[in-house]
Length: 530
Image 1: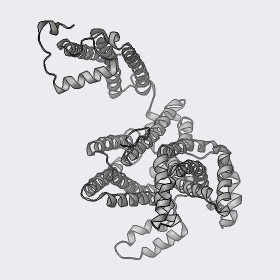
Image 2 (image 1 turned 180 degrees about the horizontal axis):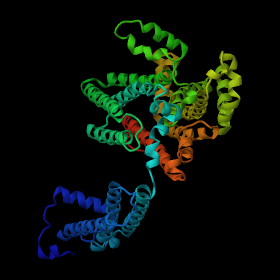
Image 3 (image 1 turned 135 degrees about the vertical axis):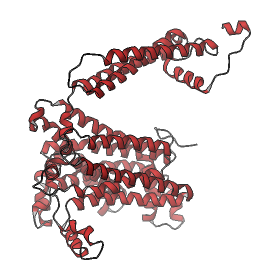
Image 4 (image 1 turned 180 degrees about the vertical axis):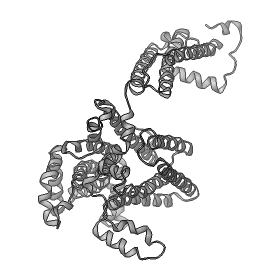
């Protein structure tokens, strides 16, 4: 029995801050033996004071360490803050466990909290030591354009004797930023949440592109164009958020489908702008004669950058996008084809699925590299037109499509037969029933698995380096051997590439969760809203 009970006094009312603090403590250390008393909150403040004092002492100690001269002041500061914070976090949990004797009421939670805090501290300390003190990231700053665009685009961008081709990417970037803003504006994402994530992402991009260290391009022009892209994203978000608030939901859904089609158009436009086909060059030459707007089309009359000269992260993104966008279309067609009762549709679909998924991706990449040109040779007047990157896009689309087909087929089998019968009874044709009833329900059910396939395709693009395509991973692997200033620094580019791949995969996962919530799936596990 507590002292407050003997004295006849009731505990004083808790403020909102104290209630929130106690809830956080229970989540980390378990229930207090002094729960419900004034001593409970007194121990909370005491533990916070101990953690704060420990942070100040450790920060002073870490910041005054004798480090290498090449460790910058900002890196030293970040290391000191991060290490001191997580160490004081550990001390805070230990203090709470001792003062409140949480190990007596909930020993398992208390032990788990202390153990987790110790593990987090050691992992963070090691990571910060590697990232801020040990590694030399100058190699990344010096080769930032190379890692993004490859050797050919970098040479044209940084050397005077070649015309720069980076203008071809800016229309794509503007449209992509606008689509991102529009999609989030129509979603149920809170404005505050979007602003926070958009601000963090924008700051990272600006820091990467505009850092003057080792910059061999016009930083001012890049700042201006990135500013335009940011403004387009914010404006698109504001316009479509206002539209979603004043418009009926069914109209909003129509606009969502339009944005999805524009995303596919954005992918195709990227390929056509980078390497305009003959018909596009001829059309641009005709439109060039139109007053006022003719000058906008004049750059497209010239040959672009052939896919064989693409490189860097751009190659990984474009191949992964082909695998996701085109692969989803291929998967839908194969899934319906396999379920069809018509042998002319069923057996080719079954054959493609079983043949393609029976072999590993690397084998199909070698097949695309050495054998596919001979197969498609009759379709091209010049076999060289069927470039390596195009072949990789075809293979990734087909390889991803067969796995997505099986996922969607499972979703189609889960659609209640009553829904299909009801649709047919209302007068819908079989094709309309499949498009409007079966497919939406199947994708709704299998969305997490489809996104997992997308993430897998994104990671599989690293296999391109095996067949000597200069993708992001290949450049990161060979970078220390090509830049004599950083000879021997092999790990930094590989760590950087790992972080980039993780960021993209994590973003796809979060987008999937957001879409599930928008569909009424409020749990990560897919639980339906009651």
